[in-house]
Amino acid sequence: HSQAAAGAAGTIKMIMAMRHGIMPKTLYAETPSPQVDWSSGAIALLDRAREWPDRGRPRRVGVSSFGVSGTNAHVILEQPPAEFTAPAPPSAATLPVWPLVLTARGPAALRGQADRLCSSLRDRSDVALADVAYSLVADRAGHDHRAVLLASDRAQALERLAEYAHGGDGAGVVADVARRGPLAMVFTGQGAQHPGMGSELHRQFPVFAAALDQACDQLDPAVRAAILGDGENRLDATEIAQPALFAVEVALFRLFESWGVRPDFLTG
Image (cartoon, rainbow, N blue to C red; front, side):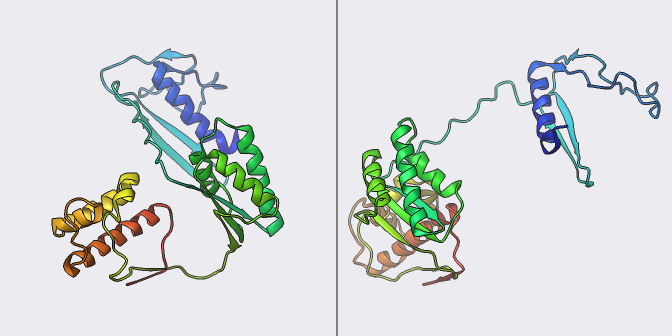
């Protein structure tokens, strides 16, 4: 018995059955149960594989999974439209630097992680640096000792990983021990604004762009122009600078939120 994988196996089996138009034979059911009146109704065992003809409507199938502990699940699957095409994967963002995030239970183990990652990157030239950066934060457990190495390309990543692995703490490396406590975000006041302050983020991150556009739709068009660096710079006017900062900060909040960073406190 495939145990925990039984439901997944049944789902895959029936997806393939719909795809090929075949109803597969039911295994180990040569003798129908005498507890069922098979002569009434329109239900029969599949004692052999049969064609599943196209009747002008989507094929549908139910998949059940029964756990010994009493957990029961039932899923109804429907054949997709014939013209269905999978959407193209989103293009990866091109960033000036990529963060390589390492975590471990101690400082020596942290440098050991850097050494292993350096060897892996050197041996796997086919793996994109963007994918490595993503996997380091999405698929690895987080421990208290942490380091972030910033690299603009593979060569710089190898250089900085090797230096950190052998005891160095050069440029582009931040290492520390995580501290327990709540997270706060501050929407700062006037003074940090500058023309085009949201232009690069707007180009690179759809989440930021959508949030910024939504905020700017409610504001003076001059605010959007100042944020993106289009047209006349009016950020020296309070009536433009204040809402521009607010719109950028809202968009930054949504961007961090999309990465799973949610504060316990928000002020500003």
